[in-house]
Image (cartoon, rainbow, N blue to C red):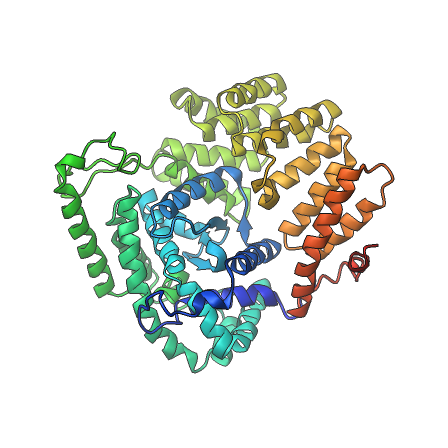
Length: 539
């Protein structure tokens, strides 16, 4: 796909994201703000979805059902405890190992793999999520869109288009090409960004810390992660290209900010700890898992990290340049000290991806005995068993898990993908049955589901359903023109019933405006060469 200019629509949405931190000199009340009039909630969601699709097309997004479930659980827990629980949020991971995160229109929040790897516990990741959620709920992102529209959107479009082009060419966020783009594009806006950022960041810190507490996380975790970032900067001193993590480029960090975050959290904890009448863990007014018993160092005791260690190690593997590199990382760790269980799991996943399933099974077998209810380990065990020929054992494991957790997205997708590898009609039919409980409104925005469902229908002998799902997968992958081509070709089939034809027509009508908007922004798919044009005429 040839983008001219590079990822222009992505640049628009990222421009609003960067402007979000730069758009407001003071914390403005909602009353009288014109921000909500710039873009309707539906339009904001549309732009957010376009950002995600374009990021996928550029290869930045890491789609993994197990990791998606972990991040979404943490994010939605925080969102539900915010002052605007009706605001929809979509949380997703980027495979970059640079420490970074951002929020954009429509409540779309991205977290880099490097940020999770730098965190010591889930509460610290939650601190970043709470901060980004607060940027959305306080309309910093939306006000940034307003400012960009009024003053500087063309400059930011051109600038961020150049940045994306530099990254595609192998540059980095602090590389020469990007630095030149920033100098030519931002110019006089740099000082204004610094000035405007302070109020927004302070407000997002303040509200985010309270949000952490409301959701049952440690409110001091935000300050803890700030200190982690400060340590990264110290370690990288002398290396100008690595001196400042990407997160700090848009979220400036000072000693005063760390101190203020710590002081605010301590005061909040002191107030919570002084409420003995509410300290019961079964109190319906408290978030699940919250305990208000004071710890020796004065902090309020909360939930354990749960799945975080397993998620972090899986992310370490999937964000590595190659599976072989991930294996080497774990071998280096093991040379220094024995691996804990989560890291043994990570090593096993790396070995699986490197094609060494027998070795992976050796690492997983004792883990499965120690953690019989751990889904991360059980799924990996089933996959390894299937790949070394123990198909019956793998099927038995997955069927038992599904009976215990019917409709579990990550589990169903893992099993369906394994069945799809067998390439038999019977396996395809079973995969369709496994995936059927996931069908619904959310499935329309679920790329891993559409890919697995397309494959399952294909080998099960249902080419029409497979074609619809493959088209949805193309659309969600940032290839809407390709999706239109596939749907128009699908319409030519003579075996379609009335309902299938109506579904296809509806999707063509829904996707066509997106393609036209992308073309208006200068983004086109040259691989398609106008083959989607008949959709405009109902052909």
